[in-house]
Structure formats: C-alpha cells, structure tokens
Image (cartoon, rainbow, N blue to C red):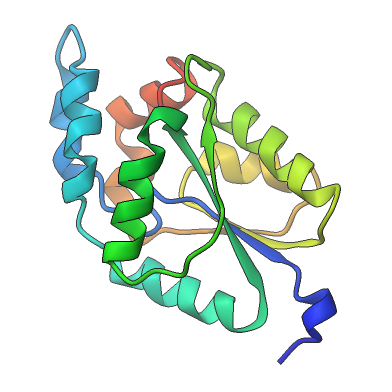
Length: 166
C-alpha cells in the first residue's frame, strides 16, 4: 500500500464508467431533446460492474474524486446513486448549472484545479475527447471502454461536446 501522505488522487467520471446511460439515450435522439426525461432517468442507471471493480482497485491505494459533466443541480441524485451501489464515498465535482462548455473543457479545468493541491495519479473516463484533452494536459488517463454506447453514441457525444449538457 502507498504511503498515506502520497496516496494521490484518482479522478473518476461517472456516466459511462460506473453508470450505464444507454437507457437514457433515446431522450436525446429526438427534436427537441427531452433533457428533463434524460436527467430524471439517471436514478435508474444500471451499475457497470467493470467500472465498479476498477474504482474499488483504485481506492485501495489512492483517494478518489468523482468528476462528472452532470449539472450541479443533480448532486443529490448522483450522491444517492453512488451510495446505493456501494461505490466509495468521495467528493463529487459537477458541471456548474448553466455551464454549456464542452465536457473536455469543463473536466480539464476541474482536474487542473484538483492538481494544484494534490497529485493526480490517474484519470478514468470513457469519453475519447476528454481522455485526449487530459492526456495533452499532462495527466495519466485510462480510457474506460466497457460501455461502448456511452462514450461513442452520437447523441451523447453531441450533448457532451456541442451542447455542453452532460
């Protein structure tokens, strides 16, 4: 086990890493998109067991921080979802309400802020663009690929990068 003074942080995304959002994607395919229904259904996201296992392994030697593109107004439902699935308790950093910047911009800002006070040992995210942006910023990144529909679904990619919604 690592020295507790130098455990470092593992920064973990939620959607597509531990939460399977595939059942919510139909709400983003129509016009207009049904954002209320998309976010209302997040309490029913199935757990991605591969992601839960990765987080459990990371928590053995590191402190965790959750970083999500979910708007801050969903902090309570997010915290309840994480706890109900037995995932490690850790701070959760959300996208500020009304912030429509692309996911990679928002997450890079959050991770850089975290790195000012702690060593960021690893970032785990499923989004190709977020992973590339964080690698380019000098962070070690593991791209989660166990929920193929989450990181690559066209509707979700537009929501994350063009519409700044999640």
